[in-house]
Image 1 (cartoon, one colour):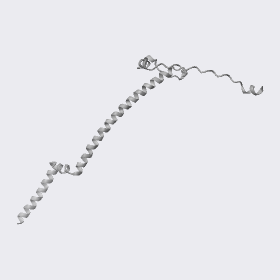
Image 2 (tube, rainbow, N blue to C red; image 1 turned 180 degrees about the vertical axis):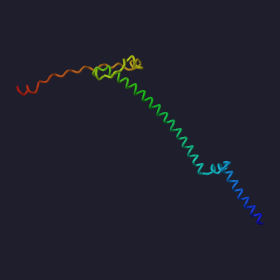
Image 3 (cartoon, helix red, strand yellow; image 1 turned 90 degrees about the vertical axis):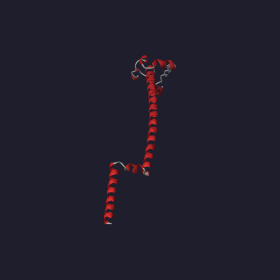
Image 4 (cartoon, rainbow, N blue to C red; image 1 turned 60 degrees about the vertical axis):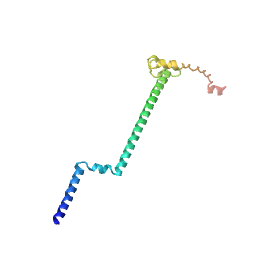
Length: 139
């Protein structure tokens, strides 16, 4: 009977060592890990995070496109205002920005066809000279 118990204990010990070696070396533990509810929950969260990331990437692309359009409109308006500032009689020549001639600006011919020409403002009447205050009190 002792031989039987010793053989049984030896078989259990060798079986445990063999099973441990299989789980470590043969990647047999992958099944136990993947069957875990916590791992399944984490995988579902990871998939949801990837979907949100793709959605945000699409929104970022849309926002970048909108900003590019706004930037091009702003640059066009800035060029137009600089052109108007160079042609305005109200701005002294020393304060006028140095801008190339309208024919050299990109799209200048198109702008002139679309927008009506602005008429120069009417001249302001010159104020009448006032009498000096010293002469008014002396008389």
